[in-house]
Amino acid sequence: MTAEPLLLVGELNTPTVWPASAALAPGGDIAVARVSLAELAERYGTPAYVLDEDEVRARARAWRRALPDAEIVYAAKAFLCRAIVDWMEQEGLGLDVCSAGELEPAATRGLPPERIVLHGNAKSPQDLRTALRLGVGRVVIDSACETARLAAQVQGPDTQQVMVRVLPGIEAGAHPKIRTGADGQKFGLSLADGSAEDTIARVLGRPRLELVGLHCHLGSQITEPGPYAEAVRRLVAFLAGLRDRYGVTLPELDLGGGFAVAYLPGDPAPTPTEYGRLITGTLASACAEHGLPVPRLTVEPGRSVIAPAGIALYRVLAVKRSAGRVFVAVDGGMSDNPRPALYGARYTVRRVGRASDAPMRAATVVGRHCEAGDVLAESVELPEDIRPGDVLAVPAAGAYQVSMASGYNMTGRPPVVAVSGGRSRLLVRRESFEDLRARDVGL
Ligand SMILES: Cc1ncc(COP(=O)(O)O)c(C=O)c1O
Ligand SMILES: N[C@@H](CCCC[NH3+])C(=O)O
Image (cartoon, rainbow, N blue to C red; front, side, top):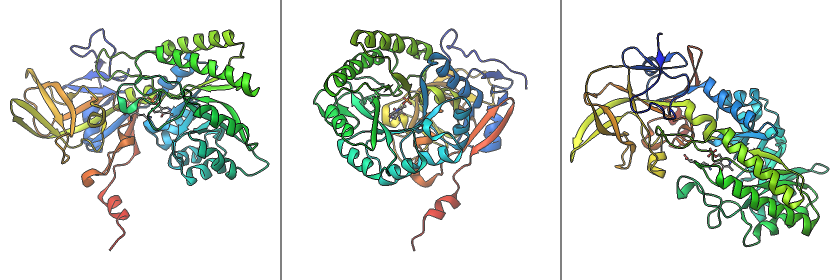
């Protein structure tokens, strides 16, 4: 199809929220990887999620280029399926998983298990058993009681490499619910109250556990590199204290993920190079100051690899006015994207597949679920002649939408379709009524 580069009104000269391959196409359409979004809506039905494979791969490679000496592990919680495991494996990334369920696709696709990191504030016995059976590279210990539980499961003469997740006392991230770098929430162990050091001492007392480093994850959608530099300074000072008090020099430092993407045009979204430059510079100088060798760095980007590659497609079911507002109701909602309801997240929306001269007006895009808070996009500009049957495309939809999709109202979770080089293919099929019925085994 013929297409021109996507320069949307109001988005000129600002970072785009669309994949690099997105282009305006005839008839009010948008093409991604040379595939028409309107045609995808027709072919796969709606709601549906589209992933630009080349965008995902390019973003993975950008992290590798930005931090060539570091280990890059993709945070599977952002979105995982078997194809993603393959793409990450081929691009040289590892995987951050936080359950046996996320481990399963990784293991069955042959990703080397030493490139897998297992997290979780409350790992189940099955999570730990599966991790040990598959030989995951590192388990991140998140509580003192986990130390004994994990050590007891490691079969001698094996040892398991572990990190301890610590709280550097830094508040960062787009919303209080996703800030995890300071005391007073469920993740990690406090540097300030001594619980991090106490757990480290316990780990050092367990010969089956090999402590290789510290881990922290400050939060998510962090829009500037500064908090990472501060975390590096605090963690390196703590590493120096451990060396002085316990005689151990830990060889690894994992800074977690949290790197922001643009949801609205112009949102701040530093590049991997910008994050990487400040992190590596600070790490080198802090280690020099404390006379420590520079530890091997790990980062765990999730959103920054996958969010901008994803587009959600919906079909309009109803349009109505209430109290002077225009509500455009679509066939998805909080069951495929809970982020607006959870964090007040904002999105842009475009109609695709029908051109008109109608002026734009403010509308609120809502879902079909039985909650007044089921809002997908507050106050977005849509053509005045929007009507049932129109297709809407929501960019920056690749992370924490399908992976957090629920079964609310039994509407069935949407499919995920990959596009690349003018072709599309189904990665995850739509959840059918048969799927829902199959789980309902009572009488
Ligand atoms: C431990 C850990 N690592 C990495 C991530 C990935 O975060 P993001 O998708 O914001 O990069 C998360 C989620 O916030 C996390 O909890
Ligand atoms: N789910 C969150 C981010 C939390 C990431 C996991 N620790 C979001 O959609 O923004």
